[in-house]
Image 1 (tube, rainbow, N blue to C red):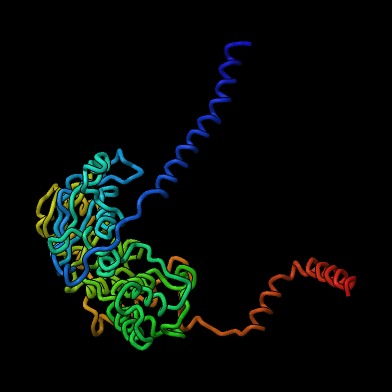
Image 2 (tube, helix red, strand yellow; image 1 turned 45 degrees about the horizontal axis):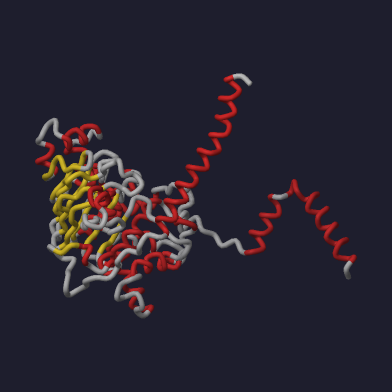
Amino acid sequence: MSVMMIVTSISGIATPLNAAARASTAATNLFAMIDAPSRETSGQKEPEVSADGDIAMMNVNFAYPGRADVKVLQGLNIKFPAGKITAIVGPSGSGKSTIVGLIERWYELDGDWTSNLKTFLLRNGRVTCGGKDVKSMDLKWWRSQIGLVQQEPFLFNDTIRQNIEHGLIGTRWEHATPRTRRKLVERACKEAFADEFIQRLPDGLDTQVGDQGIKLSGGQRQRIAIARAIIKRPKILILDEATAAIDVKGEQMVQAALDRVSRGRTTITIAHRLSTIKKAHNIVVLAKGKAVQQGTHDALMAQVGGAYWTLATAQQLSLDQADELESPGVSGEKQRSMDIMDSEESGSSGDEIKENDYQDRGFLTSFGALIAEQGRRWPWYSMFLFGALIAGGEFS
């Protein structure tokens, strides 16, 4: 047997062995995750702790469990003042969304080096609110204090009312009377400027939104998500790329809603579009997991050649352009123009609900149209029907 044949035979055997080894490793990791101890969710609630204080991230280092070789945050120190708007910007992969995950406690910082030194070196530091470590707080209570609006809001295949009421789960209004919940829904819709288009729908709050909200436009879905986030009256509001998936026209209405609901709340805004964070009290620029710049929009733009100035220039952002895109006050003639703009915006699915487009055709009309569309297949349907009648007749 030649050397080449031997090598080929060994390679043929090694390939399935390598695949089996990889499968075994994956299974081991899976079972290790299943057998991992459950997270401690109990802790302090009001009045022992409060969500009214400043949120701070102190000397935070973090790497995801599945990517231990990549350090996402490196010695990060950020303070989010209570009642103020803090914006976070930076290139993709700089750690913006990781900050949201740590504040929401989707991931924990392991502070005990005696139990697992490797884990401690990968994930350490503190996240506090009002000087209290968030790990010491009851997890359900802590998350009930936070309203989160993400880039792609998920809507259930249900009515607008039910989608917004889901925001009450885990709060003291979860089991309130239907009348109380309806009032909370209506108030949240007004604050999010969602009542403007809901009133034009045939069934109002009882309108079905379709699978993942496909019957609504992008801006309408986002305003429902905002209403769902604020219906529980959260003290902390996190906006994770809340306007990134909306066109410029739809962005104006959504940004106006975000400006309103942010008042008086500790707000953390993550954005790629710098025009949406111009009015933030403090802007933090991240790069490779570190805060490289902080300040107001004007102060950072004055630092020519800096990280923020570079990002703004790359987007061709100037003060005049920012003023044009800035969220207007919603009142008078401007409100009407925004209503017109919003009614003309189109969703990504192209299946937006409009009052003038809706027609109740009835069952027979709809079924007749369906049968008419299947004209080419009638011979086959006739054969199937004839066969079914013959088969059924044999057993009669």
